[in-house]
Image 1 (cartoon, rainbow, N blue to C red):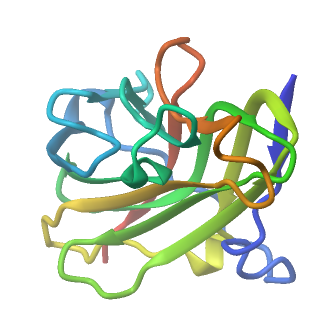
Image 2 (image 1 turned 180 degrees about the vertical axis):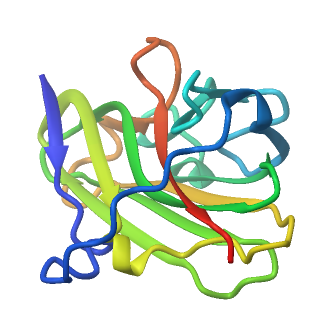
Length: 210
């Protein structure tokens, strides 16, 4: 059973006026997404991969070495892991896009008194405007976890029409021992692809350029 935390930081306008109907995506064979760079302790070289859905409405990032931990057998730097992905999103002329929704999944084992946090931020290359969301967890916990970041249509940040800029996604996992005993317990939080269901899915919103 998933331990779920609802997103609040990115639900920017729950009372916004109804948005226009979504724009159909461009033909699937005209959209490609690839990882340009993956930097950070949570995604060493070759440990992150991207798959695009057949309808080009979503893409999935899977990790194989993304885990933060504290306690017995850990190093002082293990409490925080991060990964910054630079994605090259190639789309046909006449379209632009934004990240409308992101689903994160993983597993957490937290001793009583320990806490963990999952953070994500999104921005286009050269753009200082960043949407961020943070989700806290508290032990005791021994379960799958899942979070969702959703942005109201009126608050979506679209790539500028006519420009080709990398999409940057910066994620972070942090674990704190809190009141738990680091000498006798180990607490960790992972976001990985050991199980095929443990991945991150990003939903794309499309818009036609003027």
